[in-house]
Image (cartoon, rainbow, N blue to C red; front, side, top):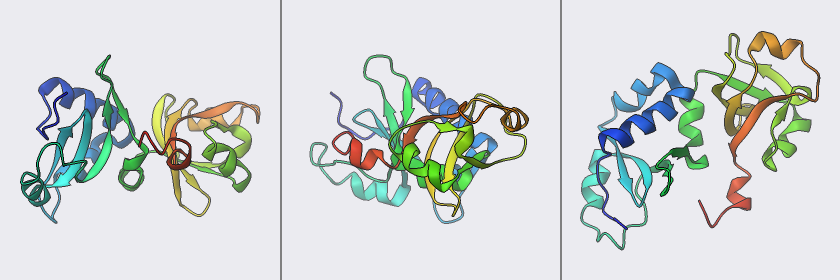
Length: 184
């Protein structure tokens, strides 16, 4: 297993940015064009990290086997399929730049944090003009980011569906910090 922190290959970059674009769209530019320093994406042990270039220089002085992580982990590539999967650890960044958002009612928060999907009955608000099959960040009514997933219905469709219909497929939620702490 390659444990050296390195730049992403062209294929890895495409796969990573395609996934990120589902949530951020053109807002990806805010991750790259920053006024507070140069930030880069690096691969380390199949995981993609987002970090300040100065931190990367410092991390290069740490032995490969000793370096566990550096920066914010955005997710990882599957060792078999090479597909990229976003990780809950990038939620704060996704929440800041997401194009489409969903807010759940208090009675839907706990069920969502147990890993369940967002049902119409739990939906409090949704960004206007959200398309179907697009990435959304899920928030509490008090604007606390809870996780992210794929919105299965358009904003207009959400108004007319049964309360038991799934609106957002849960891809990741902060409950994972407890449910899957060994894997994060």
